[in-house]
Image: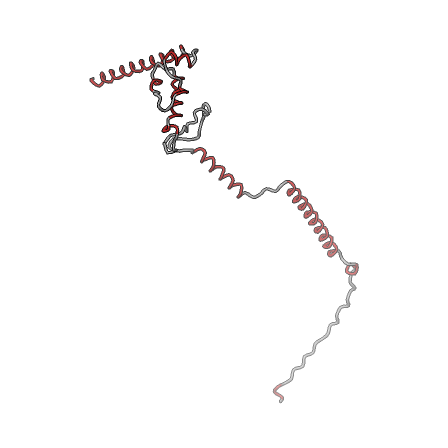
Amino acid sequence: MSDFWANRRAAVAREEEAEQVALEVQRRLEAEEAVADKSDEELLEELGLPDPAHMDAESDFKAFLQDTVPARLRTRALRQLWRVNPVLANLDGLIDYGEDYTDAATVIENLQTTYQVGKGMLAHVEEMARQAEAEEAEKNEPDEPEDDDVMELAEEDAESEDSVEDDNTIAASEVQEDAAPSPIMAEEPEALPMPRHRRMTFTFEDKRAG
């Protein structure tokens, strides 16, 4: 139960602090609107401040940091301080975050990126890998003949078919010529005389007679 009331008191304190901050912001906005129509010279005279353009490194710029000073005068004074102070004006390039890398003035509204926390530019890398695979597949595929090549191949096929048909026609005619009977063979052969019957005689020698 004690934790509940402690958390409750802390929440109430945060709410009161937020209300005070909101009131302070509202007060500053109203003050800026009240002096918006006045020139810088008039405001400097009313506040008793010197012209920032005439200040040097020995001048006191703390007076411009008060809440009663409008934001535009404070900005002018700080810019002059950055110019006249050698420590701030002459940077050696060794200061971390010495330049503005946010490009907040040129950033596009609703800018989207393929960067993912913990993965980096994952989508970009995957797209590059997909393109590399597509290019490799195109290299491995056989080249398709162009239209002129297709026409030439078709003409060659037609010529080869015609030559094959001519060869077949010639071969068929040769076969027909070979198969056709010659005029000599077409005539019936003459009847040959029948051979005469002969009686064969056998003589046996008596080997015992010797």
